[in-house]
Image (tube, rainbow, N blue to C red; front, side, top):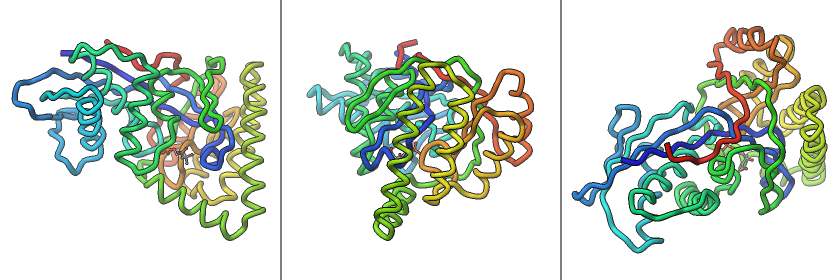
Length: 306
Ligand code: PMV
């Protein structure tokens, strides 16, 4: 039996704008998915997620099965496997659970087969898997989950930035949504108001560029301010919603440096970066609005064999 684990992620800046070529910053967090695999002679793939046998309609099943098929195709081999998944990440809420399950499955199966895959190679195969399952996928999620840390995504290039030691509180609304539907709504808005929306997206790009300087200087106040401006622009393109905006305002009032949605929005999660002394107050403010609070931090630890 081989067990590999991989982290989830948040977007500090730049979601949606990144779809149109602007830069974004995504960060691995210390909430992980761990996948155990062993080869079996039946030739079948059996998956158990947190004690639940998965059927082929469940989301995780698609990623895990496609990961197994992709390994078979790329390495010209055939095998059956029993795969078991344990997750600290709520699924389909913008915290990168599909990327984490995909890369941890690829790595665990490769190790079972005696294939040595470096994390960046796993990220590339993981991106193929996400693209096959979703139709469209940015390489950011599988890269961040495989390599960990804080990552600047610029067009097709990715670069690590220095990490930060600061509490991150995530408010999970529990509302699942389709990333591609939210992206499509921004595309429609951009077609209706091309100049206006292009300017908004390019301002989000400017925020990300300024954010890289604030990160380098460990300027938490500046980072928080930029997150709040980023949130205002995300509101203007209609990807925040009442539940998320309430959590964002509650966090700021309770003493966060800054707060915004993370990922596609319209459901899913928001994040707040918070001084140590305000963690309790901000957590309580998020919980008061019926969201699940995840107390986390940036993590340099990417995909690893346990
Ligand atoms: O909510 P998520 O984790 O699927 O993130 C979506 C982020 C977008 O910028 C909207 C899309 C993308 O692929 O970058």
